[in-house]
Amino acid sequence: MSTNFRTELVDEKLYLEGYFIRFNEETELWPDVYEEVLPESVKESINNDIRCLFNHDTGSVLGRTSNNTLKLTVDDKGVFGSVEVNQEDPEAMSVYSKVKRGDIDACSFGFNVRKEEIEDRDDGTTKFVLKDIDLHEVSVVTFPAYPTTAIAARNKDIELDKRRKLEIKKKEAREKIHGIKTIDFK
Image (cartoon, rainbow, N blue to C red; front, side, top):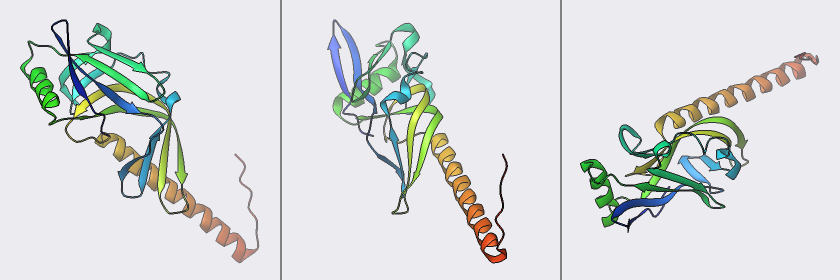
């Protein structure tokens, strides 16, 4: 998701700033699969010790909340971040220069899902609505996309949902053929 990330110079300090998460905007993860982040989804984890990375690389830390080199705020649009660039770190300066020049202008975020709603829509598409996530990192990225691990988890959720629906259809067909109604006690 593009964030219109920008650079800023304040009191000889350099900053990268922009929205890492946008609320209430549907994002296509891959064909026919969408995701939307609700504002309440970050409520429990916004005060975690969150790192700002480059391209989700844990070896490329640009800042973190626990030492105040990353500041995150939540507003009605999403999660806005300001990262103080370490001018002694060549990699951080390289990222800053790429953002300043416009080569990089996007971001993403890393999280684990705690609560979500899965919508199977009439047009055959699936939409995940994130209601509660455990946010652990935000990233300045070359290509804005959700982390591969989150996508893999989504694939697994879709397959489980399809199997569950197939089992329900099989059960209904057996009941129709045999004229027997079964009751599940749980």
